[in-house]
Image (cartoon, rainbow, N blue to C red):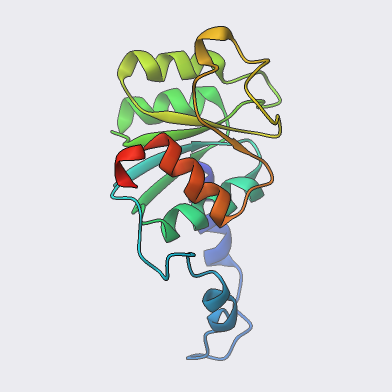
Length: 161
C-alpha cells in the first residue's frame, strides 16, 4: 500500500468536526495560492514521490497539485518505487536522497536508464557529495515551500518557463 492510499484510508476513518457545508480550510486555502495567481506551471499527469517522511511527502503533494500535477503517487521505499514504475507511467519523479534504509542513487540511475525525468529532494544543500554521475540532477533543498518547489520544477523542466 502506497502512502497516499494509507492517508486516504486514515482520513476516511477520522470523523470531521466541522458542520456540514462549512469549509474549515477556506481561509488556509486562500493563503496557499501559487505566487503566479493560481496559474498552473505543470502539465504533468502522474508524478512519483519517493519520500520516507509522510509529512514531507504530503507537503510536496499539496504543492505539486497547486503547480498543476493531477496524480501524485507517494512511496516510502526503493522497493515500492520500483513496483510503482513497473505498474504506472510517470512524467517525472521526486527522490528523497537519504531514505533511512539507504540512498536513492541506484534508483535514480534506473530512472535515467528508463528516461524518466527526476530531481532530488534533500536536506543536503548541494550535490557536491553526490556520485559524480548524478551531480547535475536538480536539487530541492528541505525544508521547502511553494516558491522553492516552483523554482525547482522550472530547473527540472526549463521549457515551461
